[in-house]
Length: 169
Image 1: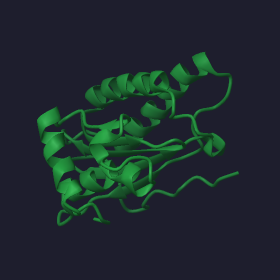
Image 2: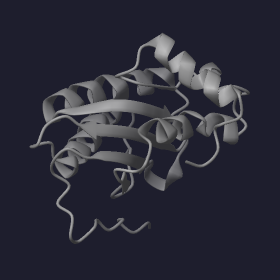
Image 3: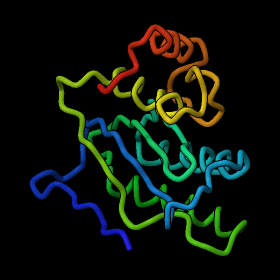
Image 4: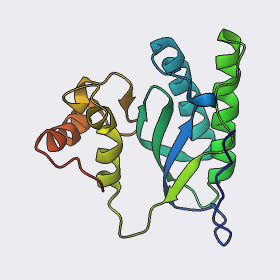
C-alpha cells in the first residue's frame, strides 16, 4: 500500500500559484491506454478546472499515471480542493465502467517557484512519452495536450522538443 504524499506544512495552496502534479492509478494499473477513459477524464478536468479557476497548461496521461501543469487564475484558487474534486469526479466516471478504484491515495505536487519557467515544465511533461520510449516525438502521442494552448502553440513547444531541449527542467 502506498503512503499518501505529505503537503508542505507552511504553505496553504490557495492563491495565484503554478503547480506540477502527478496522480498515480491504484496499484499502478495500466488504465490510461483506453482513449474513452482518457476522454472522460479530460472532460471532467476541464469542468473542474473552470469551476476552481485553474488553467490546465499541459497534461500527459501515461499508462499508470497522469501529469498535469496548472496555473491558478484567482486569488481564491485552492489546489487541494481542485485536486480532490478532479480525483473524485474522474474516479466516479471510471467506476461506472469498471468496478475498481481509479486512483491511489494522495498525489504528488510541486509548487513552481517564480524563477521556474512554466514552459520548461510544460515541455518536460509533454516529453514524457518520448523518454518512456512510446513515441519518437511528443506530437505523436495522442494522450497529452493543453487546455490553454491551441494546436499551433503546442506544435511550437513540440518543435522545441524535437530540437533536443526536452531534458529535465
